[in-house]
Image (tube, rainbow, N blue to C red; front, side, top):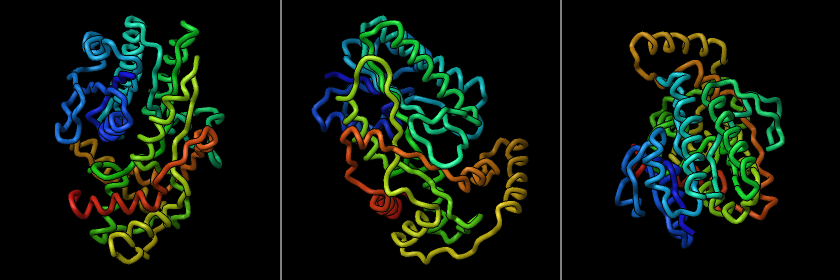
Length: 323
């Protein structure tokens, strides 16, 4: 099977492309940025999902498309950009798939479509996004339902991953957490007892390859998170241990920290600088995000790496290459 990975130069895309090739699939990559040739040896097409001609050029003679490309940062992206790339871009890919007769499609969405829910979520939880990124991804999911409804032979899977981490990701909340613990700058905001579902990148890539055999007419949705589900305190404890650092003990109430973080929000708006501390990030870090992924496990998938081992490998990379 020949598979086009849209967004293969990105963090997840690089791991997924390698896993596909290691599993015997023929992979083609497409991205707005070129991949690292030392890490990604598949045939590559430089292209933009907002340009249908680029998509057609990349997708010729492929059997399946995996779509990862998206706008996802929490800073400096307008609502118009989110919807233009995440919704219109997805529609462009689906239109090109229809034009080329491609009937298999896997889409990387996000648990952000669920918004802030009481308790845990499953694939049956009604989405209620509260941030623009989640809204745009949910809108993109709807284009996939419309695409499959147009032809009963079309098959699609929507994957909703939690926070994805692993070696090589030198940005994002998990990297910042490891960095702050290593540099002894981390303090708990709140008690740290909120669950924070996470996904180790190699497990997510393995899960995607597993789901290739689960495609069937219509649309199926799968959450992805690793087990055991861990609290912030447990995650910090693992990272501190692997960094040979003592467990941070200082705990500050959430309200005063949120008030201070809003100062950085204001400075960010005035200067255009992306401060690592913002009210949105503090609130997100201290909100329980508990997303179950029992459906994919019930289908037979068993990840090889548990959460703690994932943190161990990521910390090892950080100490050797990521600092």
